[in-house]
Length: 486
Image (cartoon, rainbow, N blue to C red; front, side, top):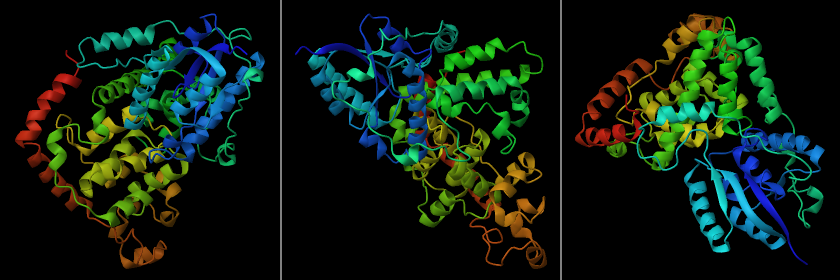
């Protein structure tokens, strides 16, 4: 019996049906298209990921299936490594072509893609990969990059042709069936954002409906940012909406009264989104080593006790612990608080950035490898080109959580302590500690480090090391490759 001929659109971090170039190309080709998602066991076991990510993906797939049901189709979900999955599909179908977005991912997915490309060439199966956002694959410098970004963001949306004729019906899967999602991925989790293209648009529409007016004022505040920020990072990370769609919506609201300052700030951050992913694309080795190779011999300490306390939110520094516990519960904190967590790990605790990079990746619902690694190293001060910023958690709390709302919410043991005593509880007298129901052994009366002393030591260490010949030498290479020419 002759095998049916189909296209395959391999979905990865592009879980949407609109502005989707691979899906548009496949559905306009005249050959029926099957949508595929793979839960690869190697990625399921990877320390960067956890149930919160796969739940978000599962919710996104459910949303796609609801949209596709009108065409008698759905996404075929397989729990297989990519090579095995495509071998299985080749046995049942004649694959005319595979379509997907380029993935700026981990070393694991990069190696997988190279292996898969060789297999497709051997089988003479065309693999059409569309660019991811405005990222240029293999770029060696940033000449013309800004113009390219604006051109890509303002281009017409790539709209698929969805119909019963262009999509392969799920009833004709040749004996295949979708892998049933684990029960723990099916339910919504309180405090955690829900995945899906529909939720992405609801969240963005709500931002423009009013809450975004305070974006520019609230962006650095850990509590207010939870509602005033766009909250689109997870939807962008998993492709429930494209960066181009979000940018064009921003432009459409540019003249709305009261939004200009917020949209100016948001626009710059959308530009940074691709900037950092481009940096990772051009220098993916930074997953394992410092961007500036001169820092490979930097004298980091090795203190499992400090690392464990940082990971669990038990350092005795109120804002640091509140941020980490908030991440455990909700998967989200704002950018400034993320930078502060990295600064405490690498500056105040003097621990290697690699000791904490996968921990935060696993907690960030919006984990995006291309943003995570360049940002982490920048905040850890191991690039040799960025300003060294040593965050003072007490000062950050005083300036951005002056009423203690955020700390009180996430640290119940400190709810009786009022500001400004809340920000430095180790300075409480024994009588005050008793009054505010803090036991003598509380970590907030006995923090693991003195942040004034550790900041001073870090400052001396970092500025002295930055003068090392090997750091200065690699700085020139980095500037030539990653800095946009004026």
